[in-house]
Image 1 (cartoon, rainbow over the protein chains, first blue to last red):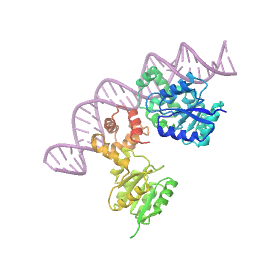
Image 2 (cartoon, each protein chain N blue to C red):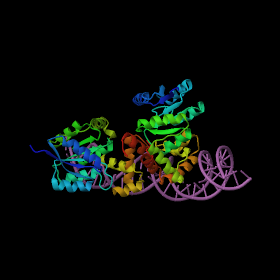
Image 3 (cartoon, rainbow over the protein chains, first blue to last red):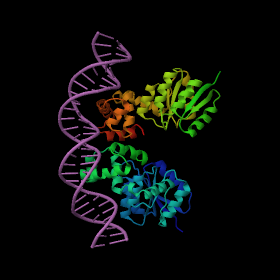
Length: 208
Length: 208
DNA sequence: GGGCGTATCAGCCAAAAGGCTGAGAGACCA
DNA sequence: TGGTCTCTCAGCCTTTTGGCTGATACGCCC
């Protein structure tokens, strides 16, 4: 049996090497490459066609993890992408799943959990950390409060402090549409102002 | 030589007991009481007159750490108050020093650092964690960017998502004064909108 | 005593944000 | 085919926010 080939994507060297050492203990898993950015990841994935891509969402500069996942999925639909990140933000989960992620792991997950997720991913099974699963369940119970992918995307820019005009320019939509999305986001978050939305998003959603 | 008497104030039991165990290894330091809230701390300090009060800033409900420090200082000026908290927020540092704190430690500080701070405090010396010192130095180099205590206080409420009217009611000042403070805060943070100020404060100031 | 920093407040105006209603296009599903 | 969801956009109106100028008061320091 050939080992499962893995590509690691994370902008921190320490995380990559730590993860590589961890996965190195498993005979059926082999890290064949590492990438420090979304751009690099696309090149590496193209050349090596790993079975699984383990991807951080927050990448310092350039393409973020979500965008990288989307492009990977377009490039090669057989690769399974596992999100491996620090925060269990509702909005990030929604966006990652929407982009085509196979699983969602937190960085404080137990090693066994990570191994299981990688093995499951190649067999088409989705695996996620317990806190992530818990959030998803909660969302399923209250579907009215689930942000749509577009809303989540907008929220992630909102907490950067952008104005409606800037949001529109960044997302290539009109200011009117921005306001519509914002109204929906406010309703779902249970707030009335953008300031409160930012505060809530950062606290409850763990965004930053 | 009598040991240095210490009062621990933190709303988390685990933090208190961890700290107590740590300080218990030092023969010249004795934890004489613990408090889970600012209100409790005032009572305990009054009754026992500890030499040093080690205080967390973020207390779940009721009086926050800053307010507790202010009242402690009014109650008994001989007690030295050490701030022991998770975040090295500029605004918190300014407010704590203004309230009369003798030192400012982060929760990830080395044990030796904590012992040294307690021993220093009873001798009238100020001790702070390296990241805190670094922030203060930076502030001294750019005095134009240092928030005044009142501005810091306002900022800490701003990031809760309050409107100008609510800020005014909470601080017992007019909306006009709120706007004046906000304009100064924006200038010091280098932003132009409250949304950006909240975003910046949470990222750069480590507030939440 | 005069300057400096801080905190307080007012009024005016322009820009931004928010509340509301309505509506069209595309995807998906029963 | 019809219903639902999502994303898109427009107009209208009110409220909020931000920029500006100017002013008073208090404490501190040289």
